[in-house]
Length: 448
Image (cartoon, rainbow, N blue to C red):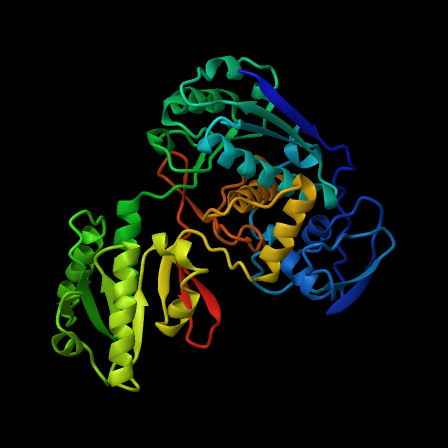
């Protein structure tokens, strides 16, 4: 397999600054050469978020820390969840915290098909994350190999640079998983699997971080959260007559939760006459509507029926609880999402009108002379969030980084990450959200 690129930034490595034990509630500090936001915060026992919030302008995504700048250093807060909250292993020879991070990428990076084009965009997001680390004074050596479907990954693993990586991102295909897992275990390399893949090795290989979450597990978790969040509502499950629907198991799990808690719910259908359909709703409670299909046509029929219902019953409160697939409609159906107080469970979220997204989209166009592909999720943002997460983790904690909640002060642009250990094996991402399109036209993300 061909190694298509080695992307190498040379910049000064992180140097720690001394902690001022006798600090006041807020003191000033003059930035020295090679100091970084991460390093200053870590050395002073505060989180990056606390440091940024104490310095107007530092919260901007394009902020660059410069030598000679005078900044405010707030005193550490009790119970701060910053870098100092997780004990780090003692520095060892060739510790990643004292040198450039060596990042390997083993994905189909070609223009031959959709997989390759999507992974090129994801890879560009990784490079943007590397650039953000460079701005903070952290060097990253990037080794990228094209590993298309059906290729023998063993040739790539024989490259001398592969065994020197601190982290490898990949693979995309299950057929390459066994060899890559064994290789990373042999050489003590962190393996970040970015997308859906069958990876049973996560149960036994402590070096694996799997981002993808099994649909069955997410379905059960979402059903439990639903009944907790809408305890006082009037749940209405709507049959859409979709013989190919994959959402039947979810509505069945919901009904099991309702039955186990003694919660009343109502069953109706999109084909039910308007009068009978209206009888399923309550004027006294919030009505939470769940379709048993994710088909777009069924959702649009539901919009029409619910609009008519609201017109005939002023004051009727209707909330639609939907599916991740409907994220694709966030632009074309945004008004209806807000009108019906929509909740969408999702492992990612991109607010296309947010300043963070607009700034990232502009950076992408500047760096690569084209716009991101019109996909949900945006693959460049996935690469950026994942790359920054793992590289910040390695730079802060070294080989002890476990990706657990609260380890890093990092606000993702699109894709949150929160890992839990799988017994004696690797780590599984547990991050998931409800995206709430509120009736006041605001959007909020609710993590669980």
